[in-house]
Length: 85
Image 1 (spheres, helix red, strand yellow):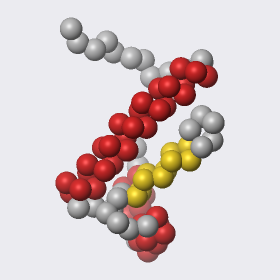
Image 2 (cartoon, rainbow, N blue to C red):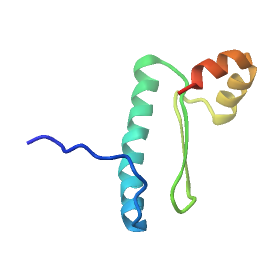
Image 3 (spheres, one colour):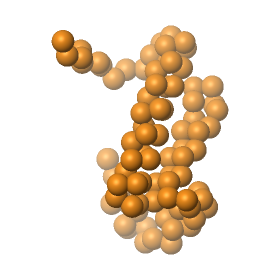
Image 4 (spheres, rainbow, N blue to C red):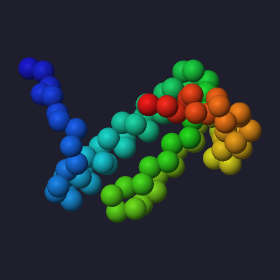
């Protein structure tokens, strides 16, 4: 039996929203850690929960300030290309 497709809509229930956030946060932090190790790249992940509690993950033993400094030194045009959806 496969998974059913979910529509991506805002959850109205605060409890459901917090539970979903918690589960998805675990998954996205795991993926960030994996890509950091497997591809030897710098990763910085900052999440704010529905209750405004921050979660920060920075891979490869570098601090957030190092990653942000590297981003700020890159040309603006390159940053635009990287983050365009």
